Image (cartoon, helix red, strand yellow):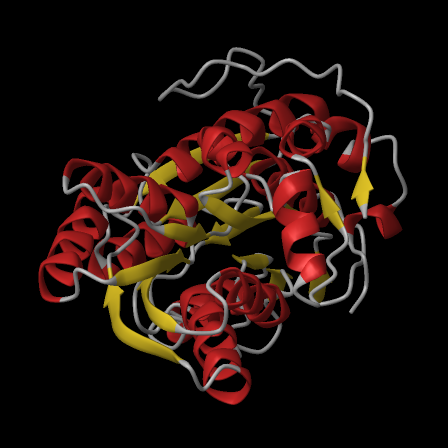
Length: 342
């Protein structure tokens, strides 16, 4: 069934490459090693993360690995040498960063692996129910196609925990529950919309009867849709993240389902967790963010008629929820508000 949520009052800060004006020497400093800072999801993470830094009274230094594991490791090593108060990492490879995470924790610096379960010892993980969410995306997309036809999947990068987990949830659910669906391709995109567009063009050329594309992050779906429209293909989509740009696709019914983590919510939440750890709060090593399914009322009704009931937010309600991060995760809330539990 559909839900509604109150509109947040928090305003966004503009993106800045320098330390914010409120920075003071006695504030804890957080170092963040991002995959990149160009993808729209990461840009929004940073915007809301800077809001969190101001509200929590910390400095946040954002560095882009530009999709390079070598760069990311070097950024983390620099943060260790600088003696920052906490380090946040969006790992390009969950195994390759283990040694440098261990170096940081041995130096007494809390490390948060964002959206990733990295087995490095005492590091914290800010996680989502990725497998379950993408399982539902698979069900919704396959159900909307009548349980038959061809689907392709756009993923991030192999070795990335989020990408791998979302891929597994999608592909294993299709294989187990929808024998009439053919998965014609899985393409790693490194979260790049242009790469996603190229993959969609290749798939549509080889499979003009392609019925749907699923994406483990919404920007990939936008890249695919741009090509599909140019080629005259009418595809269905299933996505993840709840980006504002997906509202038109959701309301038209072309995007059957999306999942709201919310780039702004994710950015604010991670900085909030890191700030609390830097200031000495105790938290469980694994923290979990609540997520929501998004669908139009019409798509949800269609799925229900086909036997798939989902608890969902409408696109408008989801956008309100996506901007309510200060209300949901602000510094006046207790530590327990930082995790929904398993």
